[in-house]
Length: 285
Image (cartoon, rainbow, N blue to C red):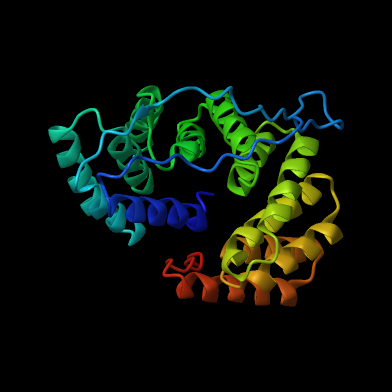
């Protein structure tokens, strides 16, 4: 999901930290759960790893342009940020924070194969840079989009083990569980994500996406009424979620409610236009 809230949190932290580059580096924010979370509804359980035993990390290798790169990332100027970060690494190849930020910039440009080794190298450096606790989250999504579900799962588990409020990594674990047809595990992870997101108005889209995934699970259980209720709740939060309009249209079509299906398709087209996606063309006669 790569929540914009998490990205903004990371980049604001970076931007603030880089304003005084000569200050001692600070770490992330780790809250380890007291017990692993295990699904009792499935043989293939989700096990949330405990945070690793604290280790002594080296000080961060700094560069005066890290703040510029972080600000470019925060303003979604990913290609420009990439240019700055590559220049930083050319001058200071050991700068783990630059490796991390460059990995994120490449991910936002869907260059997951290039992003993954940079993210992994930032952790392997042993440096204590701001945002280090979030690296596993981005590794998780990079591995997922590269089709490496086992590595993705380990990264998300590590992240939620050290950051108890990591709703987006719970969402990632849910997506993997859905792909592996572990419906009970997906349910648990999605419910945890929804709980952590809460009713924060700034997180409406993230909550909408999680509720839509819960609706998908109800469809797999052949419970269309429950699925429809979740899809409708999802759209109340985010009316531009055009994929959910498409799912509702299909539900109406399967129930032979042609007029309702047509209205849902029209809403789908309108939502796509609002978010700048090309509307689906009518089939040729």
